[in-house]
Image (cartoon, helix red, strand yellow):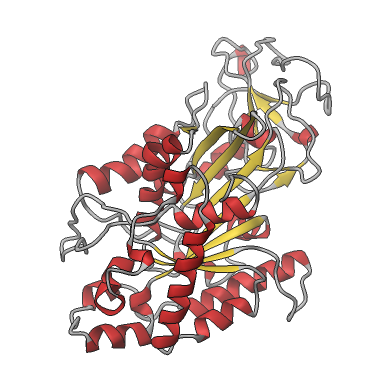
Length: 431
C-alpha cells in the first residue's frame, strides 16, 4: 500500500454551509486548498432534470478524470450556491430542482467533502516511507485498531465516510481492498503501483473517516477527518512526480515515517550475528530502491521549497520515526524493553508521555549500539521535534511465507505514532 494518511481537525457548526477558516479547506482526496466560498455542490436528486434533454444524468468531467475513468460518467448536476460566503444561513438547494440534499464537493476534483473537513481548521498528518516498509499493512491494521478498539476506549467515534449519492462508501472500500485480503483471506496486500492515474483503481482511493469525541475538560464536541491515501513508495523518491503527493506534504502538520529496520545494514548485521540468517524474504523486491536517506531528503526538500524554509533552519513539523516489523528485532533487543510491551495510551484515554519518552530513549540507545546513530542526527538536523517508535502490523512470528500467506494480524503499538502527533497538535489530551 502506499504511503499516506492525513488528519484534519475541525470544530462543528450547525449550518449546512461551510464556515470560514483562516487556513482554508483542504480536500481529503486531492489535497488542494481553497476558501469556503469556493465549495461546490452535487445534486443527489435522481429526478433532477439538469442534464441533457432534461435528464438527471449530467456528466462530471472533473470527477471522472480524478477517478481515472476511461470515459466521463454522469454522476449528478454540479452547481455553486447562489450566496457564496454566506456562513450562517440555512441549507443549500439545487439551482435546478431545488432539492435541499446536495453533497458538498471539492472545486478541484469534485470529490465529496465530509462536513468535519469543511467546518474548520485543517490538521494533516502524513504516513510516508520507503518501498517495502510495510505501509499497506500498517495503514490497514491501524484503521482496524482505530475503529474497533482505540476509538472505543478513548470515548471517540471513528466512523467511515459515505455519501448519499452512493459514489463513495469508505466502509465497503476498506473491506474490499484492505480488510478482507489481509484479515479474512490472510494474505499479504499487493505492492501499490506507482503514480495516481490510469484506471479506476479502488486501492488508490483515499479511505476517509471522522473522529468524533467530547473534550472531557470542557464538554466541547470536536470532529476530525482522517484520510488515508495509498501511493507507491517510489512516488516520494521524486517529489515532483505526482502533484497530489506534493500538495499532501506541503500541508502536513505531522509526519509518520515508516522505516523497515531490516533494510538498515547495521541492524541486519546484528541479526545475522544473533543467528537470524534467513532475511531474504523480508528484503524481497526492495533491492535497488531509494532508502531512508533518499526519502528523507525528498521530504525535506519538498517541505522547505513549499514553505520557504532555508537550509539549516529547523522544520517545525513533528516527525515520528516508526520502525516497522519491530517484532523481528526481538533477538537483538530483548522482549523486556518498553517498546515490546502493549501500548498504554488508549487504555488511559490520553497520550501517556512517560511511555513515549521511555520508548524513544530505548530506540535511540539501540541505534547507537547498532552503529546507526546517524539516523538520529539526520532527522534532527532537519526537524525540530522528533520521536522514535517501534511498531508491528502483523505481529510476532507472522512473517509472510513464500506464497504471501500470513496469520491474522496481532499488532503491536501501531497507533502510538499517530496519537503522539495528535497530542502534539492538541487534538487529544495527554498525561
